[in-house]
Structures are given as structure tokens and as C-alpha cells.
Image 1 (cartoon, one colour):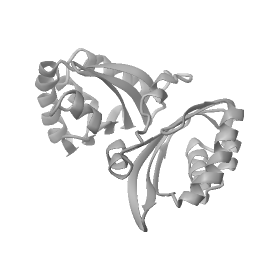
Image 2: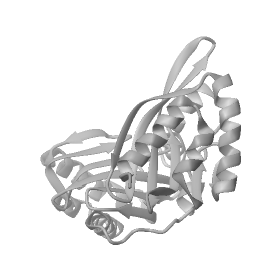
Image 3: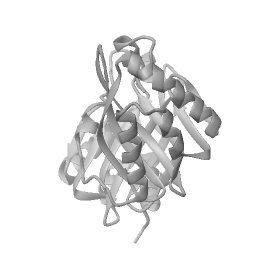
Image 4: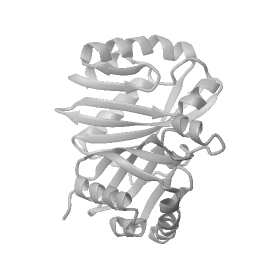
Length: 267
């Protein structure tokens, strides 16, 4: 049986070839595929129809995908990639990410996201949907140690114990925040989290964990950030080694966050 990494890599390769109809080979009969523009596609029949339309439309638009980075364990994985959109002869790179859950060697849940801030600069009339995927809970995994680490992280964060979160990170860990930037090494990560322990409660920011999945070395979580001005969805990509995070990469709609509570960071 192909590994989760192999399946996700093949899934990405088919997208690169723009033979979208073939993607149906890699999904379960009851799979859910969430597209940031078309929303959730539930079941193989709906996914097949959607992919047929993608195969008809995307090549004509000149859009293609590049720079795939895939990380996967047994049943959980994620990818980061670039969607290249041509406008008036100029190619514009839009960062994107996907999260996956597999069952019996096939994808039972996949959700794609694009950087909404970057996309809005290109198409201000089209707003990617980042919220519907977080409501499509599909067989949450609780068996892997990485998943248990994710739940511990969220239990501590929900109690505003940001400073204590540093104990969950490895010495060479990386924390990526879309507002504050990239923090490398436990000292930098600790300093950042201690800062959040003051800023988040003062800002009236809380979180709800909507979905999560993890094996032993790879995990992801989907969440909702609640601010005084409203709520917005987000997610985090994780890698784990020896029971500690080596990567925590957050994504949320920065434009929407700033409108709800400028200039605070929602995480």
C-alpha cells in the first residue's frame, strides 16, 4: 500500500499535470474536498464533477501550481505550494496550503487554502472562503502522539497559558506567525509566546479548536479566533519530533483580522 506521503505526492503531481479528473482515484467514496472558491465537495460523485470542471477551466486560465512541499506520516499530511496566476502577461505567485486526512490508503478529507491577502491584491472582487472547511469535521484522529500534543497545546492556550506553551517546543523549533514573523530556536519562540501571554488577554482574544489530526510526526489543527469585533478561521501546520513541536506554522486571513481588531495579532 502506498504511504500517505506517496498518495499526497501523486495527488499533487496530477494537479501539476492539470489532469484533475484523475484525482478521484485517490479519494474515498465518502471523501470531503474543500476548495477555497467553490466550497466543500462531499462524496466521490461531487468531487468527480468538480474536478471535471476544473480540468475544463483551469488550463484556459493559465493557472498552474509549483513549489510543492509535502510532509506526511501514516494518515495525516499537509502541503505548501504556490498557485501561479497570470494577469496581463505577468505571472503572480499566490502562496497556498493543503491539509489531508487518509483512510485505508486514500484521502478522506482534503482542504485547500490560498493566501487571501495576496489573492485580494490580484482579484479584489473574489474573496476565498476560509471558513467552510473548518466546519467539515471528518473522522478526527486522537490516536497519534502528535495529535495528543496538539490537544495539549490547545488546552493550554485556551487557558491563556501562552508562556507555558514553550515547554512543548524543541530546541531547534520554528514558529511562523503571519503578523509577527518567523521565530527560530527555543529562545526566540519562548520570548514570542511570553509576549502573547500579555497581549492576547488584553485584546480579548479567545480561540475554538474546530478540527485536528495527527500521527506521530505530523499534525494540523483548524480553529476559529474570536475577537471583540468578530471571528475568523485559521489553521496551523505542525511537525513533531520526540514528543515536541519542531514547526508551528499559523495561517489566517490577515486582512480580515486587521479589520476586526487592528493592529493586534489574532493568535
